[in-house]
Amino acid sequence: GENVEQHPSTLSVQEGDSAVIKCTYSDSASNYFPWYKQELGKGPQLIIDIRSNVGEKKDQRIAVTLNKTAKHFSLHITETQPEDSAVYFCAASNENTGFQKLVFGTGTRLLVSP
Amino acid sequence: DAGVIQSPRHEVTEMGQEVTLRCKPISGHNSLFWYRQTMMRGLELLIYFNNNVPIDDSGMPEDRFSAKMPNASFSTLKIQPSEPRDSAVYFCASSLGRGTLRGETQYFGPGTRLLVL
Image 1: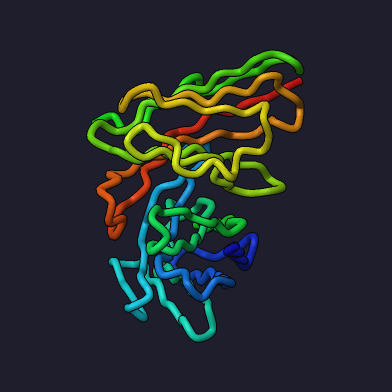
Image 2: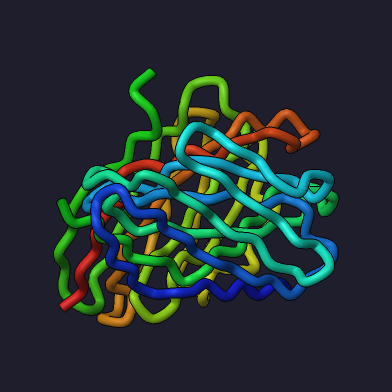
């Protein structure tokens, strides 16, 4: 089955810096890669996703890149703000299986210091 | 919409007791997922329902765990008997479940934090 690895486990940056979180996946059939943000005491929330037919996607300060050949994808946050502090999870899924079975990475705790 | 609703938010019980977690998906969503989150194993899918029917329960850890979805607006996850290793945060999520799956976001509830003593 699919296995998703995520690095780093913790990331501390200064406000205004950029943050990059990287994930690798094992199943070449995976074609959907969402990123979730989990704030303390809350459930994960989707912040951006990408599909295998696209190499990069941007949404304001957030971008995701995908390298299918190397089987890795990354989350980029620019101009970080204290409210970006949270745990971020990557996930992978094969949408051709019939349902969206997400396999999650282990999470990255991002701390943005003012 | 109020989003996915879970109850209780916190549950403390003793080993051997029965625990029932409840979930109300977003109205109009046809797919429902139960996840478990622990420090050791991260976020794991336990079971997935589509149109109230269990489609994949391969993530259910053992027979002590059972899940039901009697109607489109309610699901339960039951642990009987509970053990200390069941301590975790349990999340329910729902999505439209239109069948094509493309572009379907899974919306997570706030979770139930379970502690089994």
